[in-house]
Image (cartoon, rainbow, N blue to C red; front, side, top):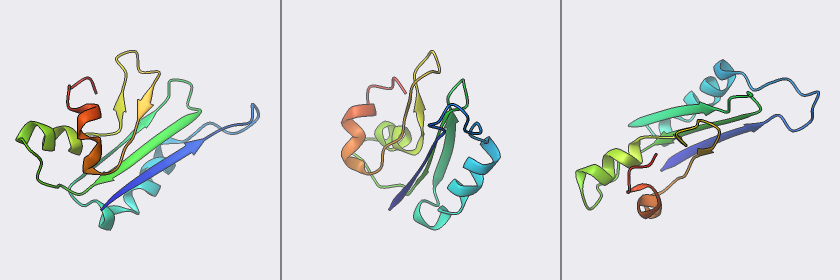
Length: 97
């Protein structure tokens, strides 16, 4: 099992995404992913992503470690990715996130 959190402040007048709120929501999914978790906020605080992960044995320890990281962010910090499930190993196994 895994869990994904996403908050998007769509309207220009919307309050920015709060990191503490995002973390609290993500933490509520602890039973769905007790092995790891994390959050990511866009630089302008308009998008927040969170994930909880359940460790599933992969083809290699490196793939397992990459799956437990998340959400992933681009080097510039302006693009985030959150994914659930072991089918996403191929997407992130190159280590770019």
